[in-house]
Length: 262
Image (cartoon, rainbow, N blue to C red):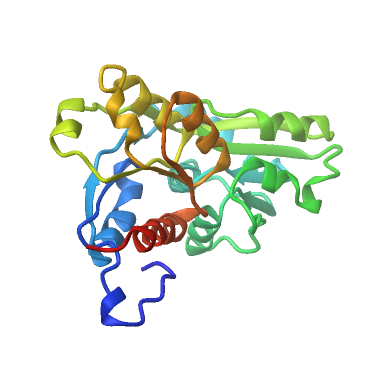
């Protein structure tokens, strides 16, 4: 459950009657779906991205076999933790002494798997926040492996290289666009939409070219970079939330309170 405090019967179901479109990959969406239901809302699960294992794990295992020789391993996301740690075990590999994660959820997932002393930013869950930590300022001569999906932003790796590190990427899972039926979306039109990645937002926007009226639907996103993209795409009502499920839920409840719960 989130950190929301529900102190009276009047606020026990603050999302009552609100339909919320949850667009995370299916495996990562269940907690948010459950919490929306617990707060009285109706969660509509429509994953925009599908996450799967890499097609050729043999090459990945060869790469991970040398992971212990690195100075630092960085996990980009909870998916990187889930798939990366599974592939590390399958390759009979070992983590280096220093491990970092971009967000609190990824760090907690690592701790749940027995990884201690995870370096993680506390104010924001992105590459910029991780790079701002003093432990990553002087990287001269350091070897870093970044565990991520196929492709993605290069800011983290490029910045660490500029600071003197040698950087290697390990693609430990693959993303693909999930099949999206705009007919289903139009038939079960949500009151609000939540999107948690720029990639997912680009895919969603591409499907709406013939249904631009949906751009008026309130959109809730957990990062300024996604919010900026949404405005550029023409979304008319964008709310920037705090990170994680708790941030999304708190923003939904706050807006509901402003408008009044029916």
